[in-house]
Length: 122
Image (cartoon, rainbow, N blue to C red; front, side):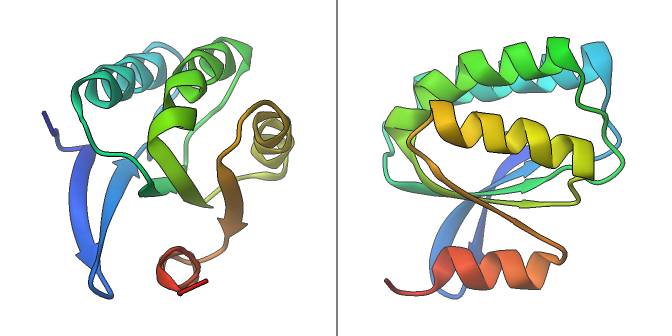
């Protein structure tokens, strides 16, 4: 299952799970997080790379609760996640999420920087 906001892309010969959470807030954001949880439950892939775009979105405590619940499942499936478009307040939520998950998160100003970090060999 993929959707307009949850889809596979290929960059630098790597397959990346692209999560477009732009322009989302409150219930619409929670709905998309729930779709992501369903997607993660259905996919057999592990060690995934994820590109998350938060431009013009609003992350409140209700959305963060939904993210925390999905992060438990993402721990099993996602190896690295690059986040673009985060505000200073969202970066605080991201720091909290880093401490409760085992996913390597990093924030970036541009998509190009995020993809470079995701796809560079370690």
